[in-house]
Image (tube, rainbow, N blue to C red):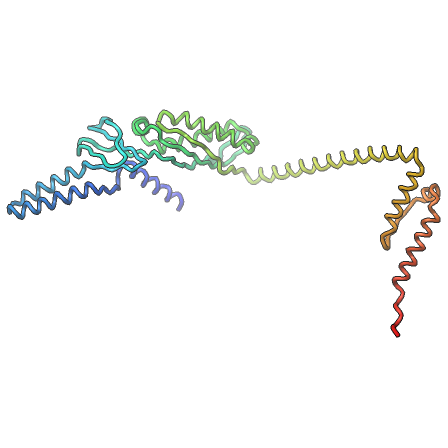
Length: 315
């Protein structure tokens, strides 16, 4: 299960930060050398006290060497008081007097967080998933100012996201992601700076809104596009009417141009085979196009009959 995997990963990270489960080669070497020396001394002197002393010595001083990785800093406490940071690499402490309380990871850490069923300023429930990129810039503060800085940063990010969503409308949340990410980064950084943590960036991965609201928004967008299409069509009709009005003025003062335009329209309509054109009779009479249209019709009919005549057989 994903939830169980996340819990186990968090536990492993907590153990690693506290130094548990680490294999220290130097400590093992000291213990083995001490036991070998005790065995040799016991065999030479026939006194088992040497072996017991060697085991005690090895068990005591094997607690002294510690190893911190390149990206880690070890917080050392002496009888409960903070003494400083150690690492990276091999360092030594006084066994049972000094302890390593935590290993602070100074790499960039990614933390995913979410705000589920959070109401926006216009009372719309949304689910928001985001990713936080942060790092520890002051290991001393991270170890001393907060109990668990990793968990604290996660909770600060989640509460900050809920706070910003509650002050933002749905339209601003969907359109102004960059602004919201910047505000969220500044808010989390302000809360986590006293812990020695700095936030590098915040990225919102997904915004989920209810299905019924998605359908309503889709219908609204479709209606808006249809409205824009009708407005554009109306504007085109107005422009076409205006151009026709200007053309009518030109044809009114120039009958020859009007006749030529009419003849061109008839030609374009009749040149297609089988085309049919209905022309008002007053237009035909006013322009004297009756004879021309009759001739065009006879020509079209003759061409049609000629194409349908069967071919003569070859001799």
